[in-house]
Amino acid sequence: MRLAALLLALVAVLFAGSLLSGPLPVSAGQALVALFGNDGTPLAVVMREIRLPRALLAVMIGASLGLSGAAMQGFLRNPLAEPGLIGVSGAAALGAVLALQTGLAASFALALPLSALGMAVVAVLLILMLAGPRGASITLILAGIAISALAGALTSLVLNLSPNPFAAADIVFWMMGSLADRSFTHVWLALPFMLVGWALLAGLGRGLDALTLGEDAAQAMGVRLPRLRLALILGTAASVGAATAVAGAIGFVGLVVPHLLRPFVGGRPSALLWASALGGAAMVLAADIAVREIFPTRDLKLGVLMALVGAPLFLHLIYKTRKELP
Amino acid sequence: MTLLSLSHMTVLRNGCPVVDDVTVNVTRGECIGLIGPNGSGKTTLLRAALGLLAARGDSSLATLPASERACAVAWMPQSREIAWPVSVQTVIALGRIPHLPRGARLRDADRAAVDAAIAHMELEAMRHRTATHLSGGEQARVLIARALAQETPLLLADEPIAGLDPAHQIATMQVFASLARGGRSVIVSLHDLALAARHCTRLLMLDRGRLVADGPPAQVLTPENVANVFGVSAFYRDTPQGVVFQPMELTG
Image 1 (tube, each protein chain N blue to C red):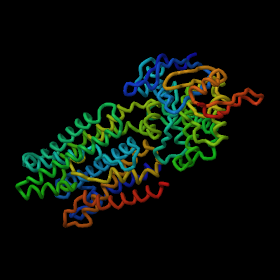
Image 2 (cartoon, each protein chain N blue to C red):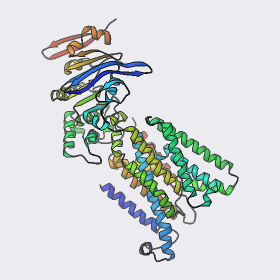
Image 3 (cartoon, rainbow over the protein chains, first blue to last red):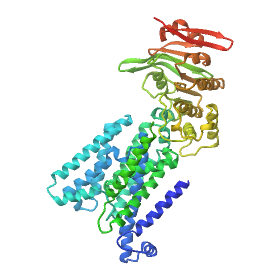
Image 4 (cartoon, one colour):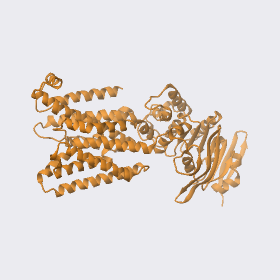
């Protein structure tokens, strides 16, 4: 409970920090008035149309990545699992790249995220078909790797054949992942998918706890594994697919956050679900503040910063795992 | 009252019967030892009885819905997996999952069941330690306690005492025997025929998937059965201190 209060407070503080962060310096009081006053001033527009959706998206995406990462690690009983493992984020990125390349992205505002979501759906159908209704977790991992590799190869092919260097640059920058220049349209597009995904993943706690003792013991305790796995795949695909569609690929959150918080919840997979959702939100908010504060004039990409912070943390994880082994 | 009835259970693997036409009835108050050489189908029979494995024939447990079955039988698999660094108490409390309404926290009855299981397996001293940091034998005792905490009328345990020290092997068998005296039943697969002979009320002897003997230890552990199935000769005597069974030599 203390951890929950602490994480909630952290998210609240970082959310406020995110609202106050940007090229236009404002005091907290001014920001508050502008946010709730809606007096039509330029500041009100900045706060309500630019900074609020950006902060909201950071929370939603961070929560999605943290929650699905915790669920994926719990299901596979492996601290190195992450939501990208089932190939949905790779496929969503491919969808976005196709939209950019074909010029579809310029035709209407939501063309890019919708195309990304469409490819995420294709990836889910593929993985359900490949992994089968009763398959073991190893088939899920292998199917995910295959789909990720295929999506990656097709993304490279699009870049390779791109006749237009500007489109290629657009694609590369989009793939780095960012929350800059997002609007409420993106919030409203992603939110329904994420809500469905969160609901599916939040219901997994009991089954994931039982899985601590292995698949056999969990099934004997009344856990229906095929159902749990379906909820995991659909929940991860909906929330992470939507996150990738609006913000591009943001790695390491789903991997690092559950790992960091596991000791604080006594290792219990069910408690780790909500803790990682809050922790993920805090991490993405913090990183999104950092990209605006470190290089205010350069457009530092969120995904780049996250990888820069995440990779050393990942190394630390490997180092610690190695030390704990006999 | 019947807790488990298996009729003509057969499990095929690549066309070969791993469990071959086994029919068994288990009533209340039995401590049953499931014995047989490596590969004789002990684990497969238990998993098929639970419905974790597709099988021909009927098992009264396999037809139950998953949630009802979890209140009728507890299962301790042979692979002793504890995936996350959780406390001993947390592992044992996992046994209460089938009894908890969705999303509920542990109630007083659940805590009492966990405490009783901890007392049975003498784990009070390590209650708050991290389960993954314990030795293999200690982890096995924690997992037995987890199965006990499920408080089901029937307990199936697959080689629960393998790797335990002699004192804890005897203590664990005594716990199973006392559960049986209290009206619950236990089926435990094991390789220690001496402990099986001393503590079980009934033995099931499997050989290449077939049930070759079923009855009290004295009727099952006959020199012919032991020689035919295990390929060893044995010393068997009913003494004032209880049954003494000791495998002696390999038979031709």
